[in-house]
Image (cartoon, rainbow, N blue to C red; front, side):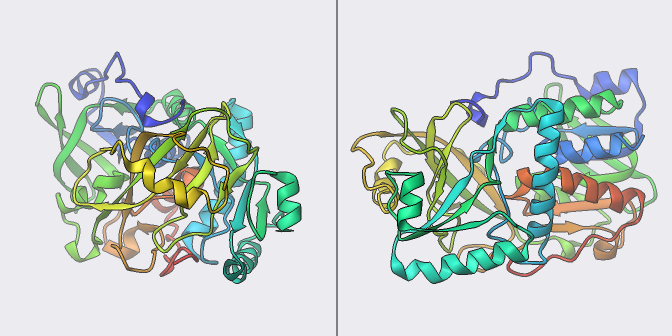
Length: 409
């Protein structure tokens, strides 16, 4: 299966920080920390505004964690609380992302999605999602009764469904490669195997201590602006920054989700999503760009970043999937990969909006911290990049986060 982090190979030519600093300046306009899809989008946006940017990534390739270990879905905006950052940035970002893919030849497939109510008692919630999507500016949602849904997907079981034509799938790796290419064409530098181990961001000139993980040499990098887009490690990184008020750093929680693939070709032409659970969007069926099926994710709360998969994990998927696909063959699922979602609230708590902090939040000029950038982060990436650029260069205030950024919670 293409597109996931399990396909990422270490880059053959690592641009070491010591090489970068030997050949170029140690002082930049901006340092972006974290080369996931959001960090790359922010780096791109700043570089395209003429800023001298360096992007620091501690791994040996771009996008090795949350950005590629996911369902690779371009979300439409059904689930998110109206007025939230997730709602606004997802709907705006989706439109920008499809246009970007067309202009930059990034592979995607706008195949649509069915959000299904498998039982009568789920219909009222499905109607809430229809109203919610319309409040978020979605104009293409279609209500389907059971017969209309079955006409589209004969193997589907449901009592009603919402059709979302604007949902799609994308190659997250190709997208990130394209963002990187854009940034580098505007003279940004991308340095891999570079871990930020400390720094002081209180003054006008921010000073970061950066370790080259191959040589263990620590160098100082200076900049006027610093963006913490470190994803799973954002809170840990923030705590290492002198000058940042500790009470502005939210708690960090990790939710691991597992995926299974299916042997053989699935009978569906669209993505199939069950009604969301309290912990996530449920074990849904997505199709990759080759039309192959994958199911997931579930949720497992963990204490540290580990991408373990259990050979028996697919066993619990069967009864869940059969609520909307009763014909799922026995012994057809195989464990595939896992991903980890960065959360700012733990189990049993209402979901929370993206947290994007600027000067008005922590009192520091030229510093933006991003926390809890989970789904729909990929869909929202261009809009997040634009927002952070505007915050740093044009003193735009970040829109306030909304408590309970996801309607399902």
